[in-house]
Image 1 (tube, rainbow, N blue to C red):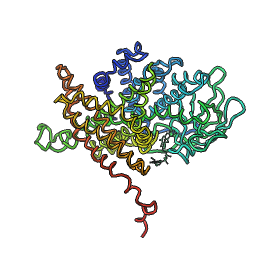
Image 2 (tube, helix red, strand yellow):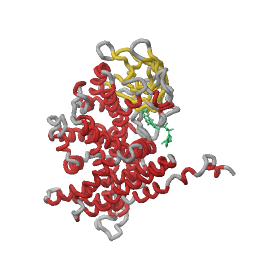
Image 3 (cartoon, rainbow, N blue to C red):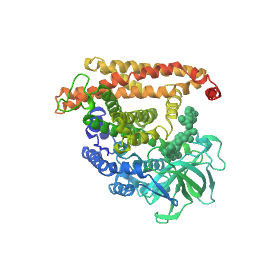
Image 4 (cartoon, rainbow, N blue to C red):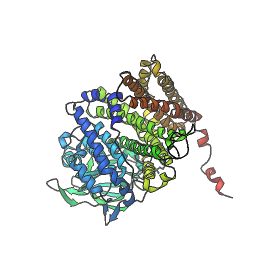
Length: 603
Ligand SMILES: Cc1cc2nc3c(=O)[nH]c(=O)nc-3n(C[C@H](O)[C@H](O)[C@H](O)COP(=O)(O)OP(=O)(O)OC[C@H]3O[C@@H](n4cnc5c(N)ncnc54)[C@H](O)[C@@H]3O)c2cc1C
């Protein structure tokens, strides 16, 4: 079975030494509650819970999967008990609204916990993860009565939430939704339709499930402008707010799928189910976006969590597995061969995993700070700037970290050789589990369009500037520091090129809108590598600063510098290929007719 040790030292480095979390927390309205002791307790308890409770269930969940008995989903053995412990420990309420039984701690702390959960049991983690998104959507858009009725239950974890968007004929294009909402003549609506691929749509972990469902009212305008959001509980609350009458929503079947077997992916049938409008009619997509933005960062964290555990286990294996002698001569003369970590190519794979995971952690923790500011800052202007920056980074966190997450988990299998392909070792499960993260919550292609089309070009590049300015400022501040030249010189060049590429695509797009779609995924990957380079440069600076003080754990900081150098010399050059492909434009993509694609099939 794979092992896991929460990367607590690395969390502390990223939070305290790179991103100055102590100052960040001190500036939040909850400053008195987020003491260093509270942060440490959450990190340590989270590490213990995820290692001792969730990790042992990861392969169990993969092997057993979920099963449907009647319309009741039975989760894998141990999942229910683990969820009970999670609820008992007060974890679901961590960053919930204190007015509704939440602990009111910053969102970022929930994200730290989330990484550990995703490392140890991604499929299990999706049950509470979706509840978090549902609670956020209700907190922002629900009526006071809805909040009073549902939020405390979601925060306590006794009820869980889902997001029901997808239908057989529509995933990306929600304008095609067919689910209908008919006013019932009282205060509610009757919801009729079928939703597919609904994660945690039915299960046995909690006493009730609150579905947030996109549907169309009878007078709805066509397309995405006509979508409304409804709350549809599995059991309607009774007069005391407890479990009442069963609603007409049920799980018709479970999908059999490539990974995340422990999470129930349900076909949900709404047969005139009672539902309640959330927010205004026809404005449902905007409300759902609150949930989707939380979920998108959450999916990026899934990519990160899987990279970390895959790396930890690949590293342990590479230190033990003896094969061949090092090219420079035997290192392990008392043994018949050297450990495979002696070989440059194995090191390449391990360092790729390490650099992407540790860099990804800084990226997520930075986005988490922005999320805290958006959520709690008392200053309007601070909130607005954080929102713009978070809007820019969300598709990067989601899509870049899941793309490289898939790569890194694949490298984990490769380090194990043929043993990586064998189920018993657990490494292939990470690849299968990671695969979905590139798809749900908007595919990489859709995140890329969101980044380049909606965020960057629609704002005439304005949305990009606050971030590239930060990078520019950092490079300027360190340009006279020789020790930092190996980082800031290439970073400054890439940062300038980012602006040039944006301009070039923007110009082409004015003539031909297909150019946006042609450039978008390469643009997103380019943006991801430059963003990570910014954080690796900051990490290098923090490591230099720490080493100047002769710390006891100098080896930790030297390893940071080594990893930063590896990132700059061996991963960052990938931007060259992406830049060239962006510049190549869309001609070759659009030249061929749809028919011509298949000419090779016919004789
Ligand atoms: C295991 C699992 C769990 C899921 N959980 C949930 C859930 O909890 N709730 C929920 O509502 N949904 C859920 N989904 C659905 C998921 O979000 C969708 O599958 C995803 O959004 C893609 O939609 P689609 O499958 O219909 O693909 P399509 O929209 O048909 O897309 C097919 C391909 O075309 C591309 N494409 C489509 N339009 C464009 C465009 N305009 N430009 C460029 N490329 C485009 C896509 O990127 C993709 O590569 C889940 C799916 C799975 C498999």
